[in-house]
Length: 306
Image 1 (cartoon, one colour):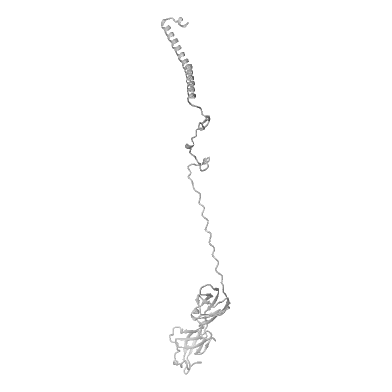
Image 2 (tube, one colour; image 1 turned 90 degrees about the vertical axis):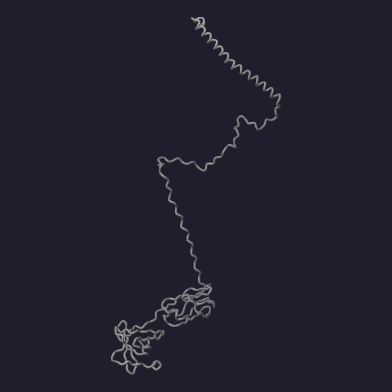
C-alpha cells in the first residue's frame, strides 16, 4: 500500500530497497539461529557413534577423574602463615601519637645474699686460772702456774703470742718461767694454752702488768758529815717537808738508800728489788754540796754495809 501510494519513482525505489534489505536480514538471522544448532547436533551424534565403536568402555571409572564439584588440588602452592600473637591493638582515643615512648625505670636487682660467717671453732682445752694474775713491770723472772683441764705434754703456754718453756705437771696443771723482758712495760698480756700444730687450744686468760711504785721525793742536796756518811736531802713532791737520809736508810718504809753522790741518789725497792735513781734538782744551783762544809769521802761498800 505504501509502494502504491508513493507519489514519485524515487520514493518507490527507496521503499523497494528497504524491503529487500530487511528481508535479507531476517533470513540471515533465522539461518544463524536454527541452521547452526541442527548441524552441531549432527556432529555430536556422529562423534559419539565413532567413539563408542573404537574405544571399549572400562568396567570401573578411574579414580583420578575430578568431580565437577571438587576444588582443584593446589596444596603445593599454598604457604602456611603462623601469626606470633594477637594483632596490635588500635591506638586509644585521644592519645598523642607524637609522644615518644619512655621506657619504665628498670627495677634494681636484689642485693646479693650475704654469706653467713662460719662460727669460730670452740676451744678443746680448758684454762681455768693463772697464778699470779697481777705483776709489776720491770721486775725479774717469775714462775707462772696455769690450772685447767685436758692438758697434754704437747700443749704449751703462750703469753702475748710467744711460746714459753712449759713444764707438764698433770692434765690439770702446767708451769712455765716468764722472762723479765716480757714484763718490761705496763699493759695486759694474753695467756693461752695451745699445741704447736694448733689442733689443741684453750680459751684466753689475762695477765696484768702494772707500773711499779716509785718514790715520791726529789733530790735537792747533800750534807757533808765529817767522820760519817754523807746525808742526802730529799723533799716530798707534793709538800715542803725535808727529809735527810744516809746510805742504808729507809725512805717511806719501802725504799732503801743504796748510793749517794753529788749528782744522784739511788733507792732500791725492798719488795720488788727495783732500783730508782733520783737526779739532783737543786733549782739552778748546779752544786748540790752545801757550802762551808768539807767533802767527806765515805768508806767502800764492803766496809759500810748495814
